Length: 369
Picture 1 (spheres, one colour):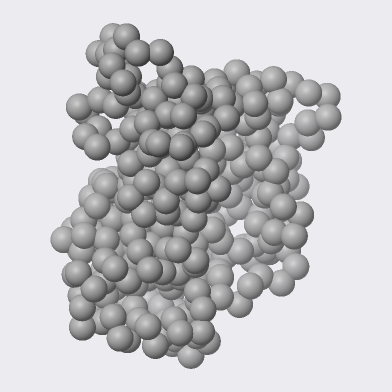
Picture 2 (cartoon, rainbow, N blue to C red; picture 1 turned 90 degrees about the vertical axis):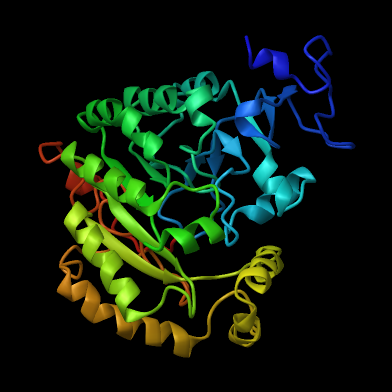
């Protein structure tokens, strides 16, 4: 196979324990491969021991379990909150995050075994919490169909958050899954300007492709909430830009919208500021002042953005498409998930699903952005 011939070190080289990078040690590494279809990217194929990841008890996320079939992301969003997770693998949060991608090739088999355990309580499982499950490599590895079937077969509600139109491939599977379990689908779309979009998130599909994805999901009778996140201060927070985006989302049939400002945690901040210095140097001083207090925008900006977007959300009908807040007290700097993005919340698409309302979480949640 063409893919097999691209193994790092040559087609006949044995699979190395340390992958493609000097000193890199990955548990369960099977092989590392490169292919001309993904120039400059190395895929480290691993055999994982577990598929279900437990969310720490202290977290206010609306779910306690996640599945991440990959680590690292070709979307290359400069602001991505997941970048620091690559440092746990002794890889960098910058270029390594975009070019050294971990693929759990056995994740479907492992997930099925874990879901078959008598102790499994069929709690909500979230996909897309670390890196996008429908980024481009999914076209080759095709892990999501097996994951969707495994969750639905076990009676487990699940949600997917993505920027990838490749999800359209699996709409028939998702329709069948939604006949058995509550399903939530979320799409992330922060801007309409394709020039800015390709600059700040160079590996993502164009805005129109994601609008078409929202429309396709809704045409399939499934819910689709949209994260307008992150809003970039002085770049995408203008009334005209926000109004145009919300109008397009309403026309596409989005079941709900959440608008959230940019936050810059840990090693994400210097990476984003480096991009800003190249592309919009006049804004660097403003950003340093705005984020001088930490990862989040200060309260005055957050309140200003809320007041700016509230009438726009009303004008496009999104104030009536209720957003759920999380259990406990959500962090003041974070928002809620849009209706439709979590199973059973605001138009799940399973209108005749017995007990769907009872399964809808009542507790408030903070977002992943």
